[in-house]
Every structure is written in C-alpha cells, then in structure tokens.
Image 1 (cartoon, one colour):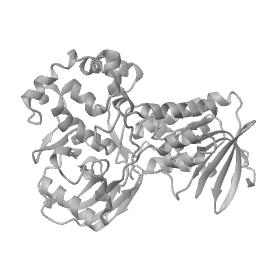
Image 2 (cartoon, helix red, strand yellow):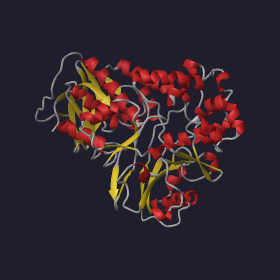
Image 3 (cartoon, helix red, strand yellow):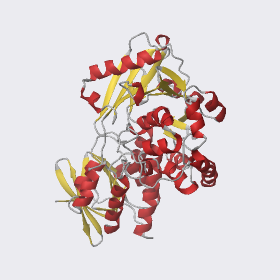
Image 4 (tube, helix red, strand yellow):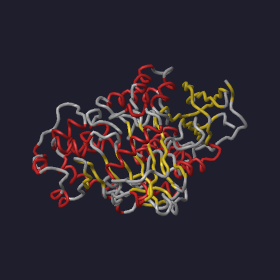
Length: 473
C-alpha cells in the first residue's frame, strides 16, 4: 500500500536514495522510496554460487568519511563489516607484458622500474608548472603537470579502473575535483598534497590512497539490504516515478506500480535514478534540463567473475589486483583478486577473480556472446597471470549503462541541473551523476541532500500517515 502523502518521495533505491531516506527518517521525516527493480542496491549486487561469493557491481568501498561508521552503527552491521587484507595495499600495473607494483612511497618510487628515470626527473619540475588557462581533460592536465609517461602508466589505467573511461574523455575539474583543486588552491600537486593532508585531518577525512577498503561478510549488498529493511513499508519495489508536477504545498508525483498509475503528494521529491531515467521524469518541467540529463554518457561494462583452483595460478596473489594501460593493447581493463581481499570469498583451495571489460576503451566487446566474452577475457588474464588450468566456474554480468562519464564541459551540465533545482525548490537530484561516482561519494552526497531537504521543510516534523491507499490517476 502507498501513503496518500509523505514529506519526501525518493525515486530510486541505489545507495544514494536509500542513504538519503535513512537520514531523513532519522530526522523524523516521513519518506517513501520507490524502486522499479525487485531488490534494492542498484548496481550493488552480491552473488553466492558454487561456494564463491562475488560482486557484480562495486567490490568494496573506501572508508574516506566517518559517515560510513555512523551508517554501519545505525544499522547494527558492526559485526558484519570487514576490512580488506593488508596485501590489498599492493596494486599492480601491466607494462611491457610484466606486472609491476605501483609505488606507494618515495623510496619505492625511486626504485620502481614502472617509470623511467626521465619520467622521475620530469616529476621534479611539477612545482614550477603554471595553472591552466582553460578547462582540461584529465589527460591534458596530467601531461602538462607531470608528463606523458605518468599519464600512460598511472593515470590511464586508474581512470579505466574507476570510470571505465579514457583520460582524454573526462574533465579533470568534474571527474577529479580534488586533484583539480590542488592546482587551483595551492598552485600545484606536490604543494597541494602537503596542504590537503592538513585539511583532511581537520575534517576527520582520509585521502583515498590511505583510506581502508571494506566490505561485509555477505558482500556489499548487505548495506542496501539493511537500509531497505530499516525503511520497512516506506520502501516499495516494482514501482517507478513517471512524472512530477508542482503544487501549492509541494509536488504531485505519478508512480506506476502493478500497471496502475498512483498519485502521491510530497513536500519534496528526490530523484535518485540514473540520468537517462531522470530525463523522462523532468521533461514536462524543463526540456533543456531533460536534454542535459539525456546527454550524459554511460558506457557499457562487463563484469566477469571466474573461480580457479589456486594451484593453477602461478602469479602470487599478494595484492588488490592489476590494472591495464591502453598502451598494452589488451581486451580487459583490469582484474581484482577478489578472494585475496576479503574472507570467505572462495572454497578451500580455490581463488576468485573479477575482470572488467568494455567501457569507453573497448565498448565493442560487449557485442560478443557471454561465452565468447568470457573466453576472450579469461585468455587475457591467463596469459598475464600465468594461469594453466580452466575455470571451475564463471559468470558474465552486463551493465549496458554502467558509469556516468564526467566529460569535458560537464560543469555546464551540473550548472543546468543546479538552475533547475533553484527553479523547483524541493525537487533535487541525488545520484552518481552529481557529486561523484564512488560509494563514498554517494553516501556523502546523500547525507548532504538529506540535510538540505530537512532544512528546506523547516521545523515541522511529521511521521508517516500510513493511510490505506493512495489516490489513483
């Protein structure tokens, strides 16, 4: 059953929508979360098969903000939360067909064969490089400040691992705002890293390279499942927001559920859907905003899980995994050594791996069948990691629209969305196409959105009315 009215209607039950609902409900607001799929979590899916536990979406999260511990405590998940094995600090890059550890300190940087001496000396000039005069791609920014070799063998594989993108496609200002801010505020990366460390300490935040990776004993889906369970009847699956229209007291939302169109009054509406779905909702209110949302590109990505007998893998599994630069001309973006990171991920004597393919680098591989795609990806992994046997189990998960791309010029898209929110007070976007794509970014954005909406609604606190049914349209 749907309530006739709520303080806040939230469309979308990914981590952004669920976390926003949780914090609004803690503040005494009545909420309703509607989700078109049968279960919560969006791309956050954990699967158990053949004794393996694996993720088809985010494999872990970085504890970059104290909000995670607060959220975990609220949900009573302290005993379920697990941190990655310390070997996860080791990350490998493929160069010239060989895996090389990414250096994590000054001494390791000097000794590493990953970068040439020419590139290392080039880095010493970074503090003397001036600011940019125009918006740059991450490729332009990195090449200008620290040289092309660092772009090719550090930033390029990193961008592929995070965004499944090419560095010449993404805006440094939009996709990596903290990196951009180092130049804007401090005049350079090295000076900025020193100054930024002091500021993070004051805010009780951690740099991403120092933050701990964590998951849960039953996988990452534990978090959205717990949030949805805490919401109880305030969470409804199989329901999708179709339209929103302003009223004198807030908004009238049309929700499609079970083939019926239902009308719900809400003082505020949070759109926590992917950009292409959000575009359809707001089009009657603003064609310009709808077009801006529809223009946000999401490349296709395949997540391939494979389980092997550990004895068949000659590569020591003493790390987080490996990333592959474009220059290596491989058919996969990278591999996570999943069972090396968290406990209970594979049966005894077995190891589990998660491979990624496609993205902005090679979207055409998603046109292959599951069998052919798995064969191609696993052949690449086997040659890199010296795997001799065949997998005992594999699974391909496809994400046709995987990750929003913060391309060059994306700031104008964000400006358009901000103007729309200003013109429609109480109607806001809270999704990974605003505020960042990582789990931590989404949680932080959800908290800020909840605080913003709570302030907007004022001091009046109302509990859910729990009326028997909504009005039908």
